[in-house]
Image (cartoon, rainbow, N blue to C red):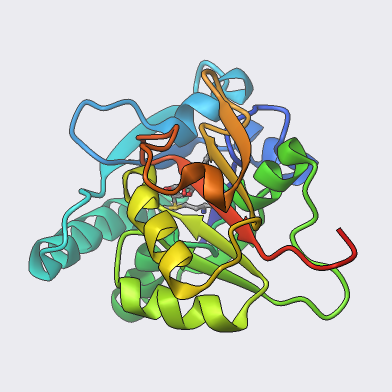
Length: 242
Ligand SMILES: C[S@@+](CC[C@H](N)C(=O)[O-])C[C@H]1O[C@@H](n2cnc3c(N)ncnc32)[C@H](O)[C@@H]1O
């Protein structure tokens, strides 16, 4: 009994590994996350061209809420559905956007299956992360030499961001572009140089992509260019060599 978790990359259907595509093409049942009932799954839309007529697809709701009890209840029910399909001897795939090991619903499914559904093996097929796709589009090196990088969800604790900002050369902010304006203000107050490079993107490698390269000073006090959950911002300290 084996379950495959496939990372389907940032949105461009050509940014999947050969192994990911082969696994999807031979799957009998594909589960994929969505934030709400009847909202199409982004991960499923990315792989649409690789599905055959007989592939069964199932969207599972992972609501974007902070109520832990309700979340755990959704994780349990979703894991149970997946486990039942795997136990029926079908070839089952769980799809996830980007890479399955980075801020992914897969983490909850893997934990639930390990704790409550013994005997199911899993194989994780990595995907291109949104930050790699972003860096490629922006033609921006994320780090070189002795530089350090932090990956930070923008929608939680500003104080933690402030601390990390002191020590790291490159800050990569994921999760929800609506929080980026307040992060910009904080970076400027924390002493990030006003000529630091700031790249902001939304829907990288998908329809309606936005990508802007600025200096910190250009963004302080204004409304930034992105307003969706699928956004990334990279803040990079400028060194003498630049
Ligand atoms: C739940 S996390 C998933 C991260 C994903 N597993 C990865 O490897 O990139 C969702 C966040 O990833 C980022 N993201 C994923 N795909 C993106 C895209 N195509 N464009 C911009 N940001 C994206 C956004 O910050 C979004 O809020």
